[in-house]
Image 1 (cartoon, rainbow, N blue to C red):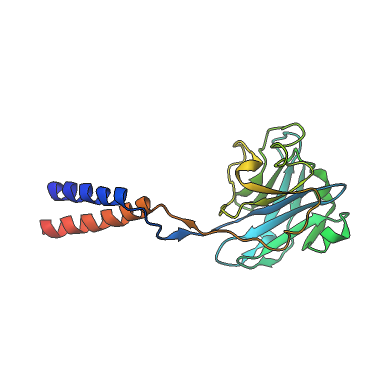
Image 2 (cartoon, rainbow, N blue to C red):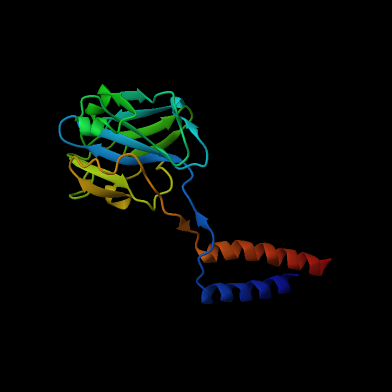
Length: 223
């Protein structure tokens, strides 16, 4: 059995090394921040995208704002008791923002005016952290990143290649790794979000599938 498995595995790995094939894909599977607006005055907003395959109750979720490197939230905003369909977005904006921004809002709050580019923002449900913009416990100064991908005076949209939220609140943060800049007071991307299906590396998919086949083959030989 071992000889058969060893020879089969060697041949299988050789096939993988000679063939680059894109097979199955991985799509978004969770809820996360899809847009961040830190604009002039009270033009502050956050867009939340439901990348799961089912509708989600936002009434169990909240946004937390951690100011200036604090490790406990300075402001907590409960989301409205509404159902967010799969693939849809929910926009929360400061109630004092310009009308052109408020026209996209599903919910408004005076508390959003508290973040100004150097504050960590968390999306959380009753059980766990779902996503974070920034880094809890770190004061980045004026903001994270450098122009044009700074978290201050900017509209940032999550890259379409990102399919899940950052669930580790203390890890390092750089907007350039997951976000695209649209500049100050640009609201043109609000109201929808899309993600790109990410191909699973062929070697990983084939390796898993191949091992199952080889083990089955070896078992038959043994029998």
